[in-house]
Image (cartoon, rainbow, N blue to C red; front, side):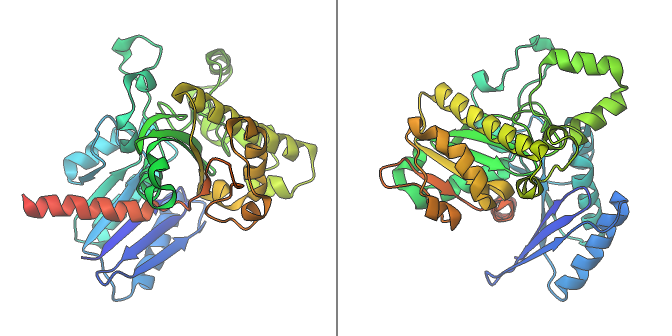
Length: 360
């Protein structure tokens, strides 16, 4: 069995092909066109060309939102395709691209297509973490996101820190989209993102949590379409830097006061989230950094960790600069860097679900 994993962004495509012989081929196609549909179509043309004679027997897709289902993955038929389409309002920044990638793959590859859901990992959260303080009849609750990577990290942790992996671990998934997850016994018990991927801590173009009164005031000033565009594209680091950039690497390289302010704001938000999750759990035994910023920015990790000495975290400057897996000083609680790998988790889920189908 060869498995092709697909992760569609708004105008980019990440893919990995896991061949039957155990080898892996990774592909990434960046911004190609301002037109989303055309951009992804062009990306898939490049992918087909680069695959050459290697063709998948299964295609697994990352889906940012799976709705209320707790299954980590599902085979996609027409009914499931329609169900996923009905969830677009929950993740309007991500699901249209996810669905477009699915539709293109269904045309290109006459093989089973499997959706793998970022929300499923958080289905283990207790009601205290899922419930929103609004009338129950509204049927709205917190979902949580970045679950495929959190699941991958949960799978990896025992091999790195042994039995500590089953204790209270906070994982900081810091990228253009960012969230934190509190794990106990390698399961999600709380996370910062909520009903949509717009909540939680400040991100590249998303504000994170806001006073509801602010949203009511903005709703008076803007149309629903304008407000939706602002919530997903014009807030966060971009707004905090007064429009300078939504990219952390650009802000770190800049010498403007606006850029410095945005960086400090982000780090304070992450520290606050770590403190909040730790207080909910009654302590924390390990801290993990992952995703683009978390893996690659030693300066951000330092700014986040230095004030956390009172919690038992002490970072080794040299190990941090070299991006080692373990970056804590002797005597400190574990501080880890684990590279995100949603693709490997998608492969595992595809193997699991096809094995069940064949067994059934």
